[in-house]
Image 1 (cartoon, helix red, strand yellow):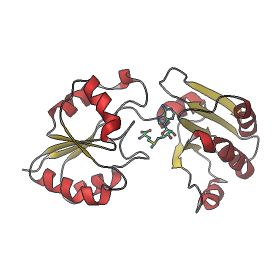
Image 2: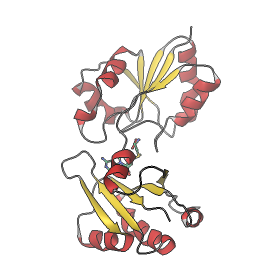
Image 3: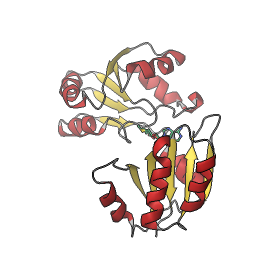
Image 4: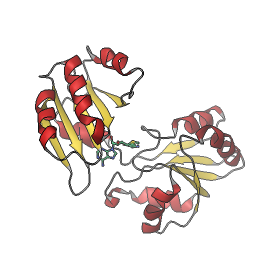
Length: 223
Ligand code: SAM
């Protein structure tokens, strides 16, 4: 009998967001795959999870998948976690899920923390239809992606790092218009959480003179 693969979301900042089921599954599985074993160690320790942890990150993902599939076929129960949030959402996971499905291995993604959902809801922009864009390409393909979004009618969600925020806001304003409504959510679920709303131009001006640290999600209204 084959085992089962669990995709287990972990908090994006606030440890209280770990679900009871996430803790139980991580305690029950045979082994845990983590994006960075050192990053996940304090979380696992905090919840009293004492399991074998192996690394599964974007640089060894292709190699690791074959071995993980073999373990699953041998009947092992395996959980995948990323550094924060839901695996496979701008994090490793997709390749393993695809291979598990190809090999008829049962899998289950637990509901749980992810940054884009609270950012979208906090934005106050239309949340009935949206497109998750993840990280924009840094160089190659960046302009093409921006052009593709010019006529996008749904709310757009981007992940961004603080040192690129101003550049991205400026380019989005260039392609979508300075007066397009948007929001920037910073440090969701953490002590210095904040959401700044306004036009792309207003938000850019705000962050030219305010703290630009922490993790960031940008939401932009559709056309
Ligand atoms: N798997 C994660 C998820 O489910 O949201 C995303 C991982 S991705 C490598 C990291 C990016 O997610 C950050 O650069 C930021 O854009 C966003 N992010 C993660 N935690 C966040 C937080 N607490 N506040 C705002 N954005 C966050």
